[in-house]
Image (cartoon, rainbow, N blue to C red; front, side, top):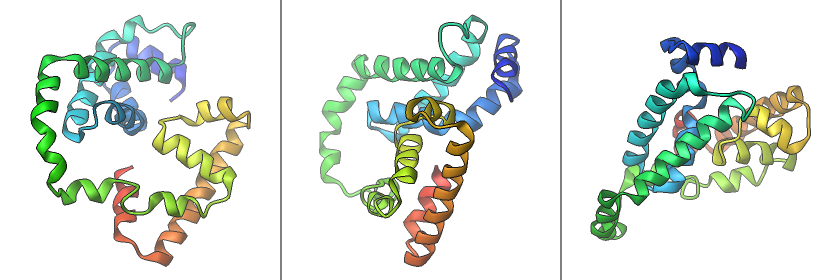
Length: 186
């Protein structure tokens, strides 16, 4: 979908548009929220809240002020920040201190540092590594990467595809199950 089609769909409250946005931007917005709240379950709930806000405020979006993703990113960030300021969050943070001492295997499976994601990314040429890190760990879209790095959108797409192929090969060589879980998750 083009940005104009997405904006029109949002303005009309089209369910297919919000579903498309969730499918294409949900992971990036989830990463933003998770970095702020540092709790996967809470981040999942806040992601849902974010998309409800996007759906409800869709008719107010002004493409002259920001890109659609930047607007959604701001909603996600503000939703997460509001949650951290709430009394319930603060109380939960105080009582959850003992969780630091408890081993949680489900968290270890998705932590890129624990399963060596950073190490494998280090094997990539810089032109690929930078794109993957910005897209998957910082939530950049391909259009934002084009603007940020000053390279054509077609080059961004080609390099992303090549990087994923190289990573798949590296993963198959190392046969690390956690990697496959990570790429399925992303």
